[in-house]
Image (tube, rainbow, N blue to C red; front, top):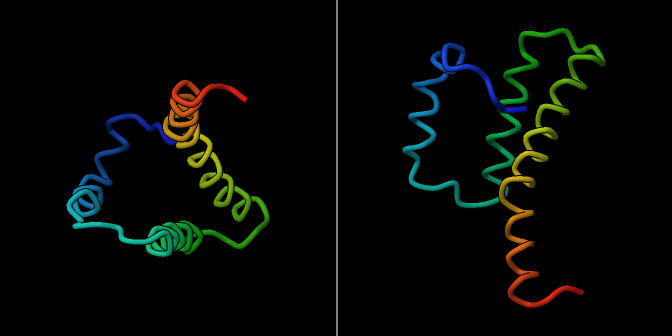
Length: 86
């Protein structure tokens, strides 16, 4: 899951500040580009073994799962309440 302790988060403080102060991430392509750059950075210090490649892909998948749980599922529940169940 994307939850790490406060001490570990400190090393990303400047990067997160810059990201939070972006005017906008305009397109899905922009979001994919930024995500891919992070994945490449992660792999730049690791041997391209299946385990490391798998870890990289599944880290993104787990974040996607958490995003779905926290945002998309709630949106779907709201739409069902507003429009009625199937």
